[in-house]
Structures are given as structure tokens and as C-alpha cells.
Image (cartoon, rainbow, N blue to C red; front, top):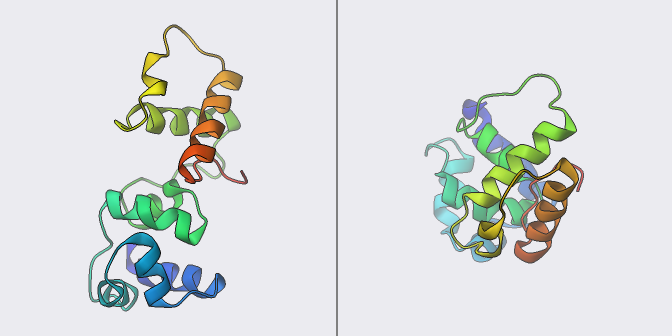
Length: 131
């Protein structure tokens, strides 16, 4: 989907009624750089920038990572457990999330979902679809 990445983020921006300057200000990036991406003159940005764009567009970071070509397309439907597991792994790899680092032992999917939901509330990042 990387060929269509610029079109994809442009449509997300328009759906939310945002200008390039609005998105740039909220994600701390240059609006001219964003315009170049939208028009296909630049490659999709790196994962760190996509993490900043996701809350602006109100989409899971994972969706932007897939659209930019950083993640392979999953099968038609990932199960709920797989979605929770992927989100949980993302949280555990976030060096700024110190409280998640103290988790020990095997956790149930419900406990992982709770941790993901708390992370989403604390950071404003959507990691799980429909959440």
C-alpha cells in the first residue's frame, strides 16, 4: 500500500477536517513536508513520525505502519488475542512506559488488554481497532 500512502493520509486528514498546518502543528512536523508526502514526492515517514501522526488522524499506529509498508499485511482478520498480543508487545518495547516493565510471569489476554487500554488512555494512542 506504500504507493498510495500519501493519498491515504490525505484522505484521513480531510475526513477529520484538518488542514496541513493543523496536522503539522499537532504532530510537530512541517506542513510542507507533509504536503510532499501526500503528493507522493516523499517516501512514507519513519515509525517515530507515524506514532505522532496516529492520534492526530485517530487511527491505530499499526494501521499507519501497515500503510507505510513497515508491517506486512496480516491475514484477512487477526483474532482478538493476536491484536491484543501485538499491542501489548508494542507497549513493552516503549522505553517511556516504565510501569509496564515490572510485569512478571505469564499474563492472560484480559490482563494484557487492560494494560493496553491503560496505555491508550495515558498516551492518547490507539493500538487496538475499534477501541
